[in-house]
Length: 98
Image (cartoon, rainbow, N blue to C red; front, side):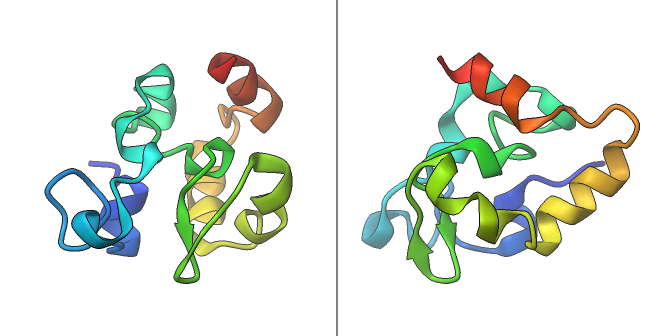
């Protein structure tokens, strides 16, 4: 079974997670517009296009502000590798969020 970002990263920001009260529930865990992308729950396997995710202990901003960090993230690179040749490009994912 393919894991979602919060399961791999252990951030605790999923609903009911250990840090959800302190840091808030991550938007990747609740964004239904990307549900099923790369076989993830909500945006759990497309978190790099969602604003407000937690990376490096800091809540991140918009896609444009955070993608340079995401593209070197081990979770992003593993999803990209697992999903190739069916990996969905960020521009396509962003269009689903509009």
